[in-house]
Length: 490
Figure 1 (tube, rainbow, N blue to C red):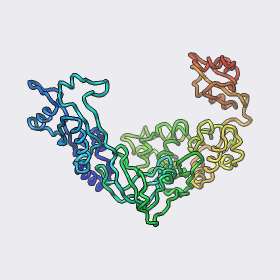
Figure 2: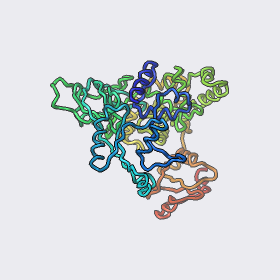
Figure 3: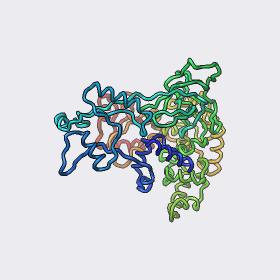
Figure 4: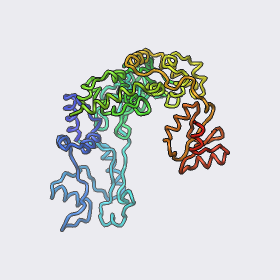
């Protein structure tokens, strides 16, 4: 019931717990709890809607079933049920229930019209998904007017800065709404939402509150036009909106709002590949205050890590060994780990080969970066902005001090025999994984692609090669076997 939901949220607020968004989510989450003791504490209620089977008794109508459930067996049955004799009465009942919505003790988003006669139900039958003897009517979302008291910005885990309207509290579809997302800068401009405006809000799908429109007739002239921040409200780093994107992003790599996401990416297999340092362990380290930035990973002790698990000494030593091993990764892995916007694994390898050291890369100019074929102007701009940030400079100093490798490990005077060549791999190789073969090709100056075109130099075909081999033959692209590939790399 709504009053039970509100009381439960009040108790959660007093205990410093996260509030439930609505009764529907609270009920669903309670039923999914693995610990039945938690479910038992929740003020759950249920309405019984149907009799599936009862021995030594038969019914002719659904209404009769409901009466039996309630009056004979003592079950709680939905009190809002209206018997109708014709379509006109059905329409009137739907309208009446719609008018009652706000006064009901529970939330609804529609009404269901059912055939009452059970014999008729048998004749009508059902489709694979729904009965033919029932149809649902969905009420339009309830709308209310309220005032925008302020617009504040929140920073998500990916660094996206989202504007949030702070509203005068208003009761809407069974819950009190005091704030709602405004999505992005374009949404605010399109609807011309200003601080101080009277706005109409509704719940999308009766769940998520949203601003529908501004009541411009109620403007007084004292409303304030909102502008997106140019710096992150959490860490103060530059906030940018790149061409072609709607989101404004924080560029700070040490931003506390982004820390969890940045850590998960930093230790991932494609990046620093720290085995054992997964999402759960990262969250535990953050919760206990054992790490406050990425570089703190390299300051962890065996004792601190062991404290995360019962009898955790072996786990701790394995993790510390993995952390130590990651210090010797190639520069390309570190570039990937930094999570520079638009820069993926392949671009990181290109940058590592081109600049050899992190110091050289951090000083690279936009013009020279944008001239690299695999980089281009958008990525070049992102790289340049990243290395100009004070937070980036601070993190790199900490990582270098911790002993993390900052140089390309590829041999000086590298062998570029595959320079200008593009390979496509297909099928299963006997001596190499696909990743190993790609690394060899790239180390020798070549490029790999996932699709065959007229610009493809070679298709390396293993066992069970498929459509890529067929396309290569159609285009006249040179196809090589694994044995021929080994000859080429000797």
